[in-house]
Length: 158
Image (cartoon, rainbow, N blue to C red; front, side, top):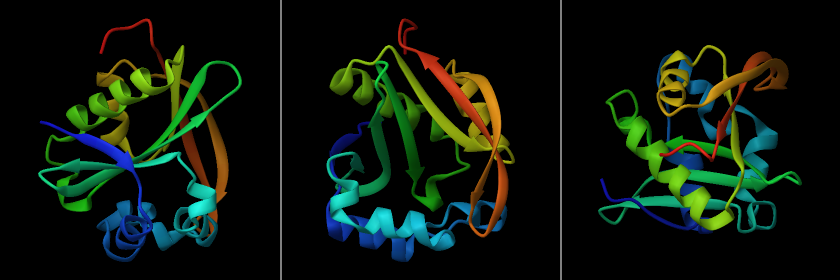
C-alpha cells in the first residue's frame, strides 16, 4: 500500500474530529471523547508541525503525531480511519509511520502508549517488534485508564 504523509491541515483536523467515530469500546478513541485532547487536536498552534495526515488514493486514511524527546526518542500517536480498522491494515499502516519517523527524525527509539484494553493494536505493535516497557494509569475521557507504554529500537529492521 502506498501511503504519503503531509502536514495536517485545519480542514483535515476538523473533518477527523467531526466524522471519525469508532464502534463499541473503541469509541474511547473518538476525538471528542476528551475535551483537552480535542482542543489540542483542533488548535493549529498546538499541532504545529507534529501532526501528519496519511493519504492513500487522495483520501485521508489516518494520521500520526511525532513528538521529539530529548534523548533521541520519538513518541508516536496515531489513528486510522475507523472503517479501515480491524481489517488487517494495521501492520502496513504502522510500518509506513515508522519509516516516516526514521527518515524524518532519525531516532534511536520510537515509543507509543496504547490503552491496555486495545489488544488488537497491541498485537500489531508486538508484530512490529515493539516491546512493553511499562504500564501506567492516566486520567482521560472522564475517568482513569490503564495504558501500556511500548518501545521500538531503531537498530531493528522494519
